[in-house]
Amino acid sequence: MTETIETKKRVALTAATLGTLLTAFTSSSINIALPSVGIDFLASPVLLSWITTAYLLITAMLLVPLGKVADIYGRKKIFSYGIFIFTLASLLCGLSASIGMLIASRLFQGIGSAMIFGTGVAILTSVFPVHERGKALGINIAATYIGLSIGPVMGGFLTQNFGWRSIFFANIPFGILAFLLITLKIKDEWADAKGETFDFTGSFLYSLSLLTLMYGLSVIPALYGFFIALIGVTGMYIFVKWELRVKNPIFNMDLFFKNRVFAFSSLAALINYCATFAIGFLLSLYLQYIKGFDPQIAGLVLISQPVIMAVFSPLAGRLSDTIEPRILASAGMGMLVAGLIPLIFLDAATPLSLIIINLMFLGLGFAFFSSPNTNAIMSSVEKKSYGIASATVATMRLTGMLFSMSIVMLVLSSKGLADVAITAETNHLFLASNQILFTIFSLLCLAGVFASLARGKRNG
Image (cartoon, rainbow, N blue to C red; front, side, top):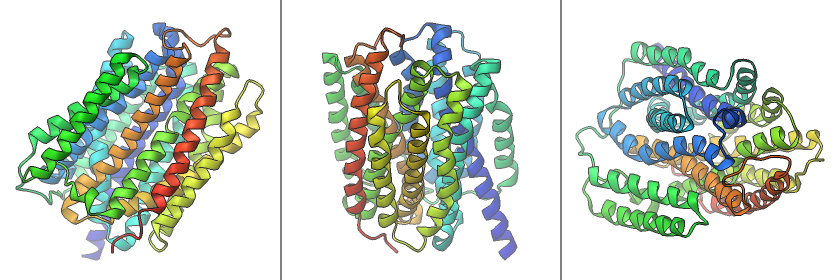
């Protein structure tokens, strides 16, 4: 019996980790390729940012509904569907003949990602007991950072030698392997909310509200952007009121209103990703446009951050099994503040060594925040809510990423870079934008330290 349980743990961890690795690689490698995509399609920085934003937007919209679907109908089933869709979408991205087709294919890819993100952590939490959970989640999060680590390097290599399309084609064999592993090797199914009805109205309100909110933020400072964002906020308020009334909500609001650890851990995650996701996007443009590096060299520079994240995440996860996640995650957020502040002063003469040192310090901060924070969230809920909690972890991450990119779009647009490419004549506008953005992100992370500390002790 012990051998069977241990085998189940290993297979589940391998499957979830492979899915995580695949999506993380795609997320980080595409940033390096954006300047090349811009050259092929004559796209502005704001339009290029939609290649990233469209993917994040659809993923965030569907995560919570699909997390509930997984709790009702089976986490393994939804996870395997996600791998299949993600792989097919990668093929379509590589075959894109226009910027519009590429963005549309990224939307399709985001559907697959939502299925993977919304179930992977829930499967691990279902299989591993509390005293081993931090270690398993740490390994899974390390896989995220390994994907982020090899993404810039492999993305730069592939882009420079085979073109940006090869980044998407490279996903296909690994996607097929992951799909076969999941469908053939995992026999168990986890559906702890089986029999509950699905809240279609709540799902529609949630997805539509998030869509309008994120789109509105992306087109600010245009006046209609404020109006659309306000509609999104109003929609979210209606969604919360509906969820409090319905018998089987897609999101149990008591998790936020009555579970302090869950609420503040989720808030800390939202702030963390809001303040840090755009770092890779901005530094990719900085290294190639301002420093003049080719994609391969830029990728080698950017790898310094996720390598540190990958090395220290399992350690941070193991520590969170015995040390309060509140302490570890708050310390990690503080490191992020210290790593962001020097980036405010980036200019054309900034030494490359200083950038690398800051990226490594940011990687350490990420590691000590993410694994303990995820462990705190997953350990604060009942078994039947693992899918929703897993989806919430990913939703906070992706919504934070969307806010991060929205802030970037807003500042770039305000500096006159909405419809023009970055050239020698506009470099000063880009550097001025960076200064504003890294100041905002530093302040957000500082607020995140207090949100992390406010969560209190974890349950159980």
